[in-house]
Amino acid sequence: MLHEERHNHILSEIAVKGAVKVAELAKLLDTSESTIRRDIAELDQAGKLKKVFGGAVALERSVKTVAEHMESKANVRVKEKDSIARYAASLLTDNDFVFIDAGTTTEKMIDYIDNQTVTFVTNGITHGKKLSEKGLKVYMTGGKLKPDTWSIVGIEAVSFLNKCNFTKCFMGANGIDPDRGFTTPNMDEALLKAEAMKRAENVYILADGSKFGCISAASFGKLEDACVITDKLRNPDFRRYTIVKETEADK
Image (cartoon, rainbow, N blue to C red):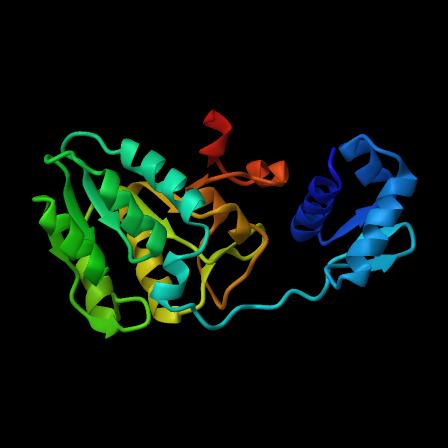
C-alpha cells in the first residue's frame, strides 16, 4: 500500500472511531507497527491527528458553521460530482415523484435526466430552471430566497413539502458523521431537508468522499435513514451505519 493511501486510511479510521491503536492499524493495513508509528508521527507533525502512547487520537473536531458560495463549490471535485450525479439520475423510474434539493451535485444530476414521465419538486432556483428547460414537469417550493446557494428555505418551503409524498428524494450534505448524522451549515436548510426525508419512500444523499467524517452546524437525519451515493469510500466502517454506493467501484 502506498504511503499516501496509508495516511488516508489512518485519518479515515480516526474520523469514525476518534482513536486508533498502532497494533490495530498494522493488522488492518497489513504492514509493520514501525511503519504505522512513522505514519502517525508524520500526521501528528502535519497537524492532522494527535500522537499518543500506543496510537493516535483525533484532534478536537471543528463544526463548520458557514456554507461555501454556490459558484465556488461548483468548481471543486467536478469529476467526482459528475460520477455521482450520473448514477443518481439512473435511479429514476417511470412516474416517479421526486424531490431534488439545491446543491452543486444535485444540479449536475439534471444533466443526465431524460425521463419525461417523472415529476419534480425542488427548492433550487437554478435546478427549477434547468428542469423546465428540458421540458420536465417541475414544481417550486415557496419561501425565502437564500442568495449564497440560490435555494428557497423557510416555513413556507417546509409547509409545501409537508403536502407531498415522494417516491424518491435526492439531497446533498456537507458532513456525514456516525454520531451527528447528515449535517449542513444552515438551520433553515436542515429543517427543509429533514422534512423532505420524512416525506420520501427512498432517500439518497449525494456526497463525494471528502464529506465523510465532517460535521456542520445543523443535523437533518441519521445515517440509517438514507442511502449514500459517493465516488469512493475511504473507510469501509461507514457501511456499518448505512448503505453506501461507490460510483468509482464500477470503473
